[in-house]
Amino acid sequence: MTELRRTNRAMFWRILRRLLGANRGRLFVMLLALGAGAAVTAALLNLQVDAKRRLTTEFSAFGPNVLISPKATLTGSDGPATLSQDIEKGVLNMLLGAHVAPFLYFYADVSTENSEQVPAVVVGMHPFTFDLLEPTWKIEPKRADARPGDCMVGATLLSHLKITTGQALHVSVAGKQVDCAVKRTVSSGGEEDNQLFVDLSAAQSLVSLPNRVSLIQILIPGTPQEIQHSLAMLQQRFPDAEVRPIRQFTEGEAKIYNRISGLLTATVAIVLLLTALCVMAAMSNVAIERKMDVGLMKAIGGATHRVVRLFLTEAALLGLAGGLIGAALGILLSIGLGKAVFGVAARPRLIVYPVAVGLTVLVAILSAFPLRRLASIRPASVFRGEA
Image (cartoon, rainbow, N blue to C red):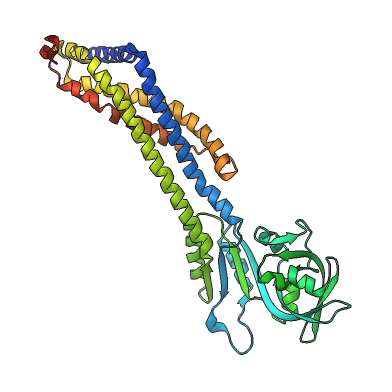
């Protein structure tokens, strides 16, 4: 029995090699169709997977996407509501990779040595926060070493005070005063142009609010789903504060990715359908040419299921060969497409390769449907020329 199986297996592969080499022109056409379909499929799938990472990176450039502020019920007669600065440490311990920027807002009188005092909104913040806000604000100069004694002035306030960078400013609140040196200017087109930004510790000391802040902005990296999960964790961890997302960023990223993903998925489906139709047309001609071969196989005792398995194996091998070559070329193609679309080359994703090859093999097997008609052929009809 073992010897018979070995003989049958050897005969099976011998017949399969003959079938594959019977018409090399048509074989090349089917390989070309399957390879082209696999290449486009792999390229689009790789772009789809890489788009999530690319969009996350691009949206991170817009700055913070989550705000933590005091609840409205916390405001009392003693002054504006504030938060404990310990929340900053709690957020950093919870969310690895997140960027946290606390702010303290208050009114103060601003002046120079030779000017009158001008009322302005003063914002206390960490010096390193300048770089976090730089993608959304126009900050000049671009690079400057921030020190606790430095401050940043909005463009409108700068012109109103008639000062230039490098000059010293006096900031006064209720008889208390701190001095700072103007090192950078900011122009955002918003309310920040009328504000003065000083070191957070100096601001807390000036208004006698140690370890208190008015607002905490957070930049949470990741996908919209990951950001929503982090948001839920923050809301549970800090129930006494109001934690809310900047929805135009988080929801906008999700909508854009869903649209891109849907478009690429639909395109992949259309490409695979066209590939299947092209291969099916070639298989129909193959079915017509192989009637005599099938009739002879059945006449010498070949079982129907073995004949069908023979042709399905042939289709699977064609799909495998076309998929292996086409998917590799498609991933290389996606690198160039990513650079053209996003400005940065797409990163090859290993998961895309087996998926593209598997889809190509599946399309090849399904496209072999016309060959199933050969299973119903009767040998006598073929030899009499009736089939």
